Amino acid sequence: MDHLLNADLHCHSVVSDGTLTPEVLALRARDNGVELWALTDHDEIGGQDRAIAAACAAGLPYLTGTEISVTFAGETVHIVGLGFDHHDPALTEGLRQTRGGRGLRAQEMSEDLARAGIPGTYEGALKYVGNPELISRTHFARYMVEAGFCRDTPEVFRRYLTEGKPGFVPHRWASLRDAVGWITGAGGIAIIAHPARYGFSPNEEYALFTEFKAHGGQGVEVVTGAHSAAEALKYAGFCAEFDLLASRGSDFHSPDESHTDLGRLPHLPGPVTPVWERLRHRIHA
Ligand code: AMP
Ligand code: MN
Ligand code: MN
Ligand code: MN
Image (cartoon, rainbow, N blue to C red; front, side, top):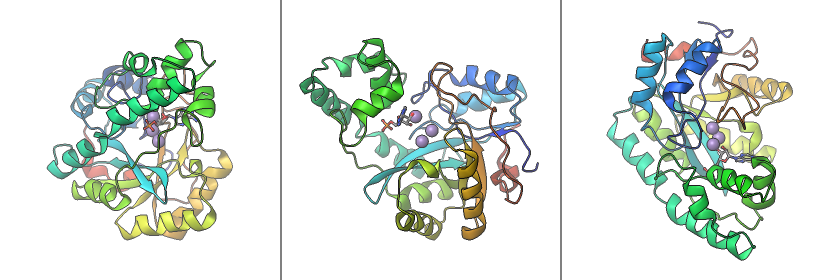
């Protein structure tokens, strides 16, 4: 168990905004050479029992996972949790509350898009939703591609679903303190997901890492599908600066949309401590 392990500790199933089931993901991970896997659905752990069973049946070591939506300094930040007790009541309730506003937000998005000349997106998005509590911008994007408004989902986000665009509805997610607290309180490790994607200034990023540490956060994603090699090196440096464990995950959502497949990503750079070294006792095998 070293930094060369093919661990993939970040991906999504139909329980959030992925297109594959936990069972299909487990087989795909194993076939792609993954040696340690975690399913990290957004704001949801309802797929964990299925993932554990499928991973065990496939002979694939497994860590419980989730990816919690957090509002920090007015921006959305994602916190991955790994290796927690997925029956923990506070974590379960915190995630339920975090999911709570998604339905209303989706209806507002749909009304705003209708005013921008794109009708019927709420109903359209629902056709792609696997979990009624977890309607996501991704489901809107899939429908808007199907309906011919854009060529692919990144174009939908660029033109309609990001800040300042007609279908973007600001939303208040969990606090950083709560998200880290739910994960660590359930015996897991909290990790800042894909840090290079937030567009923070250096000062804001320093504040994020400092507050995350103060709340008990212990890790950062160094290698992810969304990081360049230079970004991976930058955050390996943050591991030393902030005394953090390094994580690795593809953020795979769908064979049609994700450019990084399960397990098909660079190794962790050498001088870091992998998060899995601190989670051996939490592995389902
Ligand atoms: P939500 O939780 O509803 O705000 O949706 C966030 C999800 O949208 C992320 O987890 C990604 O799967 C997807 N997403 C965010 N930004 C983009 C983008 N620029 N292109 C494609 N997908 C994106
Ligand atoms: Mn997603
Ligand atoms: Mn994310
Ligand atoms: Mn993700």
